[in-house]
Image (cartoon, rainbow, N blue to C red; front, side, top):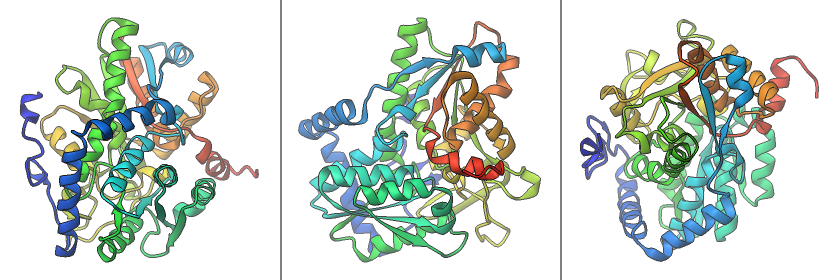
Length: 400
């Protein structure tokens, strides 16, 4: 499998027919500058040493691979391990990429970084990285996501970032990315755009995957230490797709079942979901070619998920490529299934997952009865659920 990946993406950022660069000419110099800097500094000993130190002493890596004994027994199925990215500093995997890009921006001589955010975790991570390296920071966030994630908005402001409310369109992640790209087009000289997922124009899908691949590298080593063998199945939620690629990438050469879980919302037939592989088609969106929820005229459709971080109309191009190769399966969990999984993990293990991660837990719950007790699942717990408690309470009609 690695041999097939030797030249993927190609020099123009293509994963087969997916990916590439579809941006205004004004952004091309910035992307070329970023690609050159990424190639240079990821071979630079001082950069790699600083990043490694921050991963250990600041982020808190390696994160544990935790045997969820109570959940495994409750489901009467396989042994379920949780890769505890929720224990990273700031509460999610997003910091792995954000701190690396902040270091890169400083070395490129930028004085300002910008980012988009949906669930707020990438915004918090970017604001954290900016504070650490001493850069100005502005975060674009849709009005609906600001409502759902008010705690994270306050955290970003505490960290010194300016949160810019996006009131256009669906007022969610898609619209926040649009505004961030517009800002970058105007301020390319002094500004770096910290893309939060394996999406967008090249080199972002490659770069973010590499910065997140530490998840799978650790998990592979940890499961071999704990069980003396590789797992039978990996499960992770898929919004843009960075936590899932981060887990899956280290296992691509192995014959292991891998499942990416999209947001099923109210169900595919309802049209209110964010399951790109279940209801989308190939299109060009926000800098790259990938699967996209769109109508016959190519207009982007509205999306819905109980989880702000999965509520996005497209998906990373590498996921499309891996799906074509039949290396990764893609399914979805509905809002109801994710909320049930949110409750179950909280009550059985004393771990409150992010609503994004709850989608992966939901798939584990569905899959467990079909697997033997000798089987092993690694489930990526991409973030903690503190940020979602108020929204879950609202959905349940509970006044806090």
